[in-house]
Length: 177
Image (cartoon, rainbow, N blue to C red; front, side, top):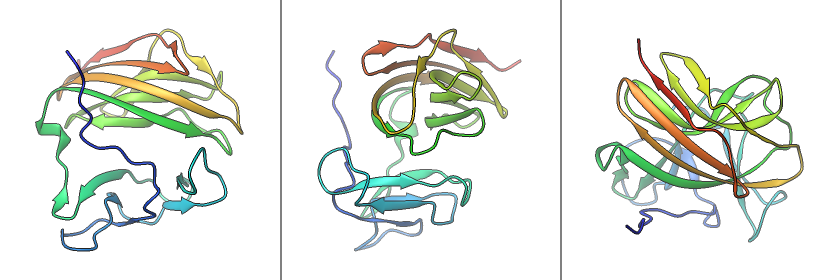
């Protein structure tokens, strides 16, 4: 079965802003949790002239995809999500975290980072507790990494499969107690 992308963005439009009601001129990316930690960079780019920059020290927020008429609710489409992120670390995260995820309304699954060994992992988070897969892929600063993710989740369970530059990390799986 072929996977059909429903949205692709490389930040080239330069449109990012705070969330709110739909309407003409609304940015198609918005900071869902408030704050302005998402900005457009024209200095650190992979290709083209722009990229998104995430500054988590400014706020703890998420980024939502939206369109002129409102937020795209990807949660209602299928429990299986497949996506690609291209990640560049100017500075590595200072705590274990999920870098990119889908929220299944009680659990989240996606691409994680573990501080103890500076590796990207498949990760599942339920009730604030992150579970990582058995193996990760080492990353450093100043390098672009192509990360592919496939997650399957529900309110109480989740699995995540992640590849970094084609190298598979161990699958993460967790169910709520």
